[in-house]
Length: 218
Image (cartoon, rainbow, N blue to C red; front, top):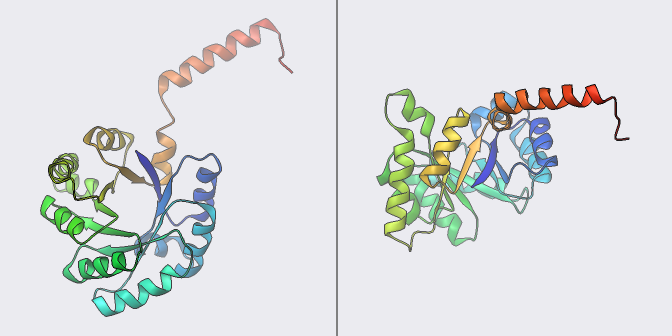
C-alpha cells in the first residue's frame, strides 16, 4: 500500500521523504491555511521534495473556475495531481482533466455510489474519508471494503482507493486489510506506525546487556 503524507508542512514532508517513507503528498485548503504559506509556494516546494503525486486541490466549486485553477496548479510541476470535490462540477472537471492526461484525486467521498461515479469519471484516485464517518458512528473501514468489492466486480474501473481521514495506526492497519491502494496520513500518524512498546522494551534490554560487556564496535 502506498503511503502519502497528508500535510502542507514542508519541513515534516522533507523529513519523511529523506528516509523514503512516503510515496506522495496530499494537501487541501485547510492544510494550506494551517501551513500559512501561499498555496503556489507551498505546492511548488512540496513537489520538488517528493517524486510521487502531490495532490493540489482547487478551491472553486464551479466547473469553469475549477478548470482555470487546475491549469495554474498543473503548471507547477509534472507530479501535480489535481484534487477536485465529489460534486457534479467536480466530476465533470475530473473527466476533462483526465482527457487532458492529468492525474486526478476526487475527494470527500462518503459512499460506494460516490466512489463508483468518481471511477466512471476517470479519477486516478478516489478518497473515502474514514475518520469522518467514524465520527458520526458509521463504519469508515467498511466503506473501504465495499468500494474494493465493487471495483473488483468491475475490472474496467481502474481508479485507486486512497484511504483518507486516517487518524491512528489502527486506521492504517484496517485500510491495508480492506484493500486500499493507498493511504494518506498526517506526519504524526506516519511516525506512530514505527512505535511499539515491545520494541522499546526490547531495545532497552539490548542496550543494558551491551553496556555490561564494556565493548565498543567503533
